[in-house]
Image 1: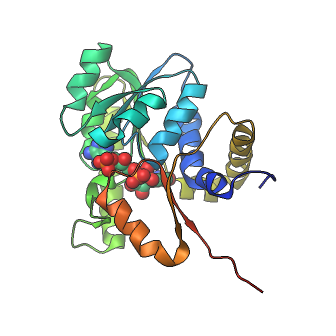
Image 2 (image 1 turned 60 degrees about the vertical axis):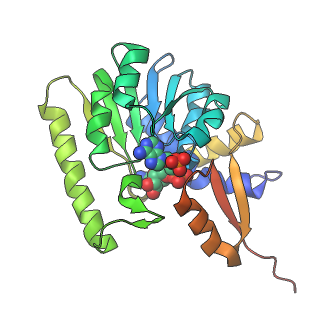
Length: 241
Ligand SMILES: NC(=O)c1ccc[n+]([C@@H]2O[C@H](COP(=O)([O-])OP(=O)(O)OC[C@H]3O[C@@H](n4cnc5c(N)ncnc54)[C@H](OP(=O)(O)O)[C@@H]3O)[C@@H](O)[C@H]2O)c1
């Protein structure tokens, strides 16, 4: 890590910003002036996509609850309250033909609805499973492993549907773990590019709260309750020699 950076901000880059950066530039291959929809736009990954999307010159819409609306507009997005509005109708009302790319961390059947908000030739990047969590835990009684396999099968169906149904719309999955395993040099290069942006103050991670490591449970409970804007950072206590 380059010297002089704030540790909490720097650690936010490793997961949320690398995910956002690679989805924008590698999965969706966005171009200046394109329109994008970001789900969970006030969350950790969502707020990172907004900051990087602003640098890339995108027109951005973001779903969030009313609690996150001001953060989304401060970061250059047009907030859509997903608890009050049907985002598919709202996107077509605001844009006419739909958007070029959608970043969907909600998962499940939500991906199908996202596809309906795309314009011709658009891409849904599917990367998360927020919809299958309740209070920070898996909502179904399945084990984590069985749940993951089921979600992979569902992803497969959506990807196949994306190719077979009319409209030239694609659904592409993204996983930071897979990409890091398959292309470690790219992960390193992207992280260095993000450290540069942080050093130049072109990005500023939103830190919702910092907790001592011993209070990790409270941090998880806070996340599970929802309404967190940005990232929660756990700080290890200093070991006194
Ligand atoms: N594939 C990968 O490589 C990768 C990498 C990083 C993260 N992820 C996954 O991506 C997802 C998001 O991560 P995160 O760190 O950004 O989580 P986060 O900080 O908890 O943010 C999630 C956001 O989604 C919002 N939300 C919940 N339900 C929604 C809905 N139906 N429509 C729109 N927004 C909704 C929440 O807002 P309210 O609480 O206000 O409702 C919250 O702001 C998680 O499932 C995570 O596991 C995947």
